[in-house]
Image 1: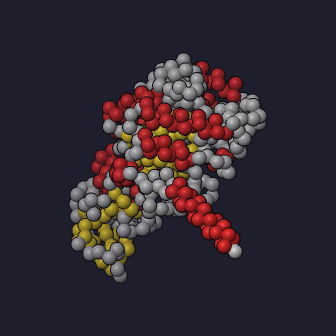
Image 2: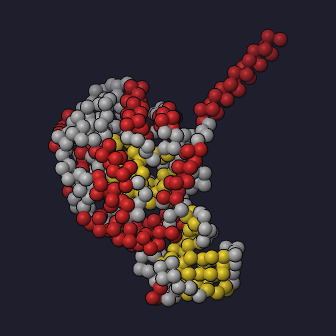
Image 3: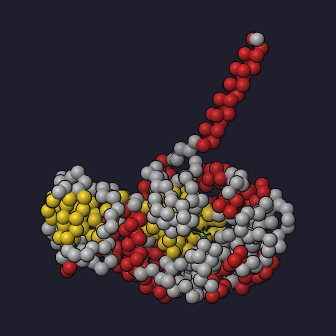
Amino acid sequence: MKQKLLILFMIHILGSFQIISAQSENNYNPTIENINARKWFQDAKFGLFVHWGVYSQLAGAGQTHGLDGEGNINEWIMDSKRIPVNRYERLAGFFNPIHYDPSEWVKLAKDAGMKYITFTTKHHDGFSMFGSKVTDYNIVDATSYKKDVFGMLAEECKEQDVKLFAYYSHLDWHHPDYWPRGRTGNNYTGRPESGDWDKYLDYVNEQIREIFTNYGPLAGAWFDGIWDKKDADWQLRKTYDIIHELQPAALILNNHHGDVNPGEDLKGFERALPGQKNFLGNKTETTTEHPMEMCQTINKSWGFNLVDTSFKSAKDIVHLLAKAAGNDANLLLNVGPQPDGRIQSEFIEILGEVGNWLKINGESIYATRMGPISPQDWGVSTIHAENKKVYIHVLNLAGEELSIPGFGKKVNKATFLKSGKKASLRYSNGNIRIRIPENEKDEMNTVVILEYS
Ligand code: GLC
């Protein structure tokens, strides 16, 4: 009897050990540097996403529709067109972006009012757009260009004071040890029908170590692709810990469309505002615990597409940015540069216009958080983290009177941000009514500042 009790006791103790060790694995206490970086991120609000790789040369190959009907055939072309590894590899040999000038890219981002750039260091095609030493299949060793485009961009970002994130795809259609293969990149690649998954994960971790060692301080990592093998043991925490050990302030986002995992710092939303249905038809949960970011692309393509002319207008982008801010999220807006390294003129023009709007109206976006009035049909509200002014972003208004729900404060001043003129306001039935005469309307987004006691 005594023995039985002892055994039961031992089982109990062991069981609680297991719980404790599982907990410590799940426990993630971000460092103070990391917490500060999160604040920087939330204040920054607007970033440039760049999808650039050897696939850019195929320019979408004349197709506008990809797997999800959203035209992402570009960086997916290896899969969509069933190109075997040994053929696709030749694309690297041709890649020679003679007009690549990262100072232009960074300047473009800056002039558009963007505070950071997220660059594809490795996409699903498995090609490293940085000078990796753990594979020859990289921009320095496998192309005629021979220069580390990511390193060049990192230098320029430092120079112009713009932060840099590394996009990195866990999914890899090229690596022989990406085995068993996932739901994409199957049966055409010509890869061996066997492989060593642990070796693949070591490869990922070595590359991540390179990225976070060789390019100075980075803003963080933007992971993608684990949805390719939902049930695989990705050992994400190990990778995340490597990053945080090397650079505690680096912020980690994983585009897995699910809840934030331990070790991740940000929550991403692909082509959807927080809480809205995304392209997969899933409703995406918002969070107040982690800074949020919505990514969207300037047309319908991520990588360069010659025929995709469905450009969003500057107004569309200002609306997106305001709506993102009004939902407590950043906007990461994508462009796909041309294979020669240039960014097409339409994008430059559109981004310039967005920048001009931000030059005047930036205080209603940067360093703000979701405002006290929840998103409405007419627009959104933001609140400045420090000065506590509330910004009303009027995106759609028929007529000249805006009615906004009261928010428990006595508003004693309303001013048009652009003209600096006072707006007349009155209260009725608990609503605040503001007159917005036609001559105060901004075609992009009319911002009214509310000050309250
Ligand atoms: C999707 C696509 C990918 C793109 C990414 C950007 O995950 O697979 O091509 O890079 O979205 O958010």
